Image (cartoon, rainbow, N blue to C red; front, side, top):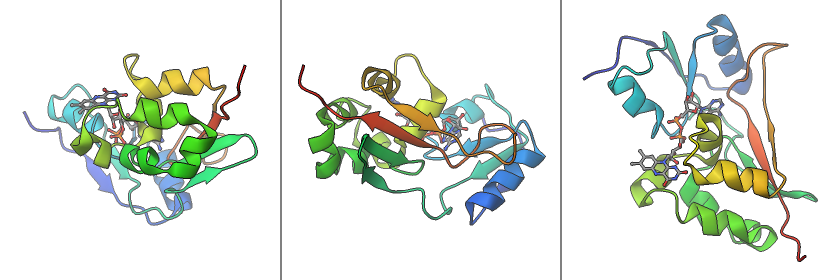
Length: 159
Ligand SMILES: Cc1cc2nc3c(=O)[nH]c(=O)nc-3n(C[C@H](O)[C@H](O)[C@H](O)COP(=O)(O)OP(=O)(O)OC[C@H]3O[C@@H](n4cnc5c(N)ncnc54)[C@H](O)[C@@H]3O)c2cc1C
């Protein structure tokens, strides 16, 4: 099958992405597309608008913070897997990410997309809960969740 027709938006800033999302409450963010595109192709999802955030700058950073590791909305699984400072602060991140799918999926799929998709069989939501992590959501005003989220993962602590 092929996806139902949709409007494709290709914003170049977070504000622009938020405006497009606010204009259509049924719009979907497109990150790595590894979960969303099969759903569209099978017509299990048929949003009128797809908001491709891949050209939004500033969403691809992995940062070590005082509390742990912060991961931007466009960080691919493969990038997180290779990040040595992040692995030192929270080794469970790399160990879990190595079990996510296979290299082709990890090269495109994003860690934040995995959290947003919230498949109960996915690794990263469990790791987020286990490490006392949190999700920061960007919204246009008081609107719905949108494109610019980050996830923060707690530090590893010896017990
Ligand atoms: C064959 C295959 C095997 C897989 N195996 C595993 C596995 O073993 N373990 C595992 O954990 N995962 C697995 N996955 C899922 C994979 O980790 C995906 O990368 C992930 O679930 C979604 O990330 P994505 O960036 O591709 O998101 P997309 O497919 O682009 O989006 C998925 C959903 O999240 C929403 N979304 C994405 N980013 C944002 C954002 N920034 N803000 C708001 N909403 C957002 C989208 O609108 C959509 O509803 C597998 C996938 C495939 C196709």
